[in-house]
Image (cartoon, rainbow, N blue to C red; front, side, top):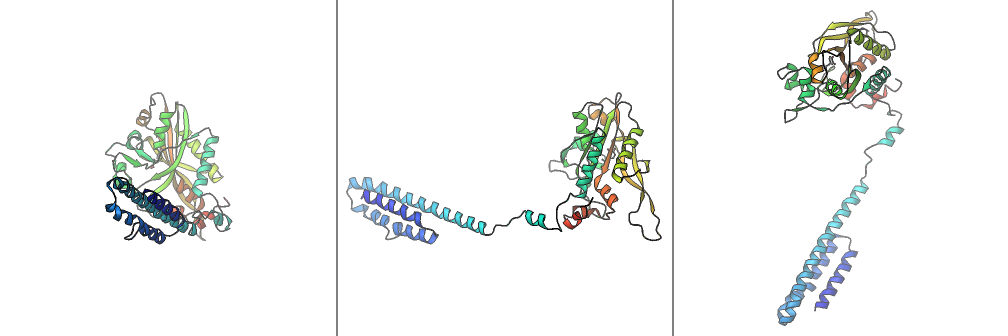
Length: 346
Ligand code: DAH
């Protein structure tokens, strides 16, 4: 009887391997373990066996029963898996759409205007001996506020324009000025660098506001740096971007991390002047900047009695809008390739 249990098991295993549907598997299982199944019959007969035989056949038939159940379970699992894989293979979608996009004339690739202006400005500053630094999007209070002379009760920390994390210690950086702090800590004066990147504000969006936009921070620290240095570098930058000498003016502006602080405006003509309209739209606010506050130098580990410097924060989205006459900042984040496509020639 022990031999017939072995052969039942071997035959079961062999038949099971040829089956391809769940129904066939369950059918085979009932042939062995159903009411009149081969194993069931053996189990039923145990009571008629001698004590010696019972000792062997009892545990053995239970073990074979268990093995058959495991085999059946595994087989059903494999069949399910095969069915899912088959379905996935049949419904395969190329979500990259890469080839069709590249082929289509409508959507052939070009850089987003903010990316290309960022690269252009990085190149301009590299050519003037500046380094290009990076910083994290997720910041802590120290780098975003405290080190920049923005104490805890300053309105710039208002929850409403900041995306705080649940721990109320980390946030999405609200400006690239955080890179000033990281730059000062990693460098020994004299130095000069720029730091471009995304910044985040919890803003209602409209034609001039977005909750995510781009800035390019700049900082120069050394001995006897003056406002003239600042104006020189800013004018050189604007000349390179607009491909002509730009008339600029400085107005006082308040930012806690600079003293004195300025708004640098450019003399601006409207891009699409209608008949009879004045070409001169006047001054356009473009570039907040100033001389680095001694508290900020100190927070960056620099002795303000020995060194000073200037800093600026250029809004890249705004610059793109001014340069190309774009009326709504939301176009820049629309993800609409027809918008992007217009910048191919630039
Ligand atoms: N961080 C400021 C903002 O986001 C911009 C800014 C102003 C940066 C003056 C500077 C600066 O470096 O000197 O509004």
